[in-house]
Image (cartoon, rainbow, N blue to C red; front, side, top):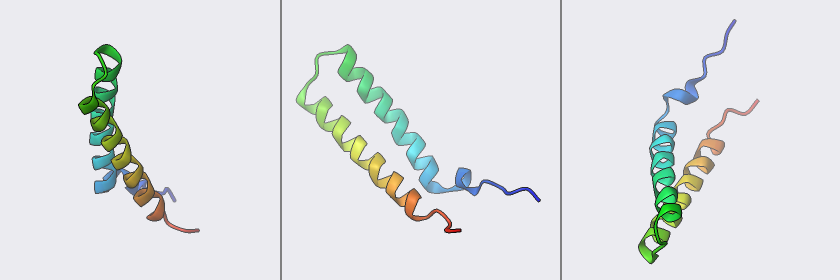
Length: 64
């Protein structure tokens, strides 16, 4: 019997993927342009949100 990976169907995964795209964009801006206070704040905020989502996903993993 095969097991279906339902993680792909959760809102956490979709939200994580969207934030990951924003993170990549913000990081590129920091690397390609002069780092500014606003760019750094944006990068820190997105990183924080990614960590929160990762924690939620880890807490919701089924326990064997």
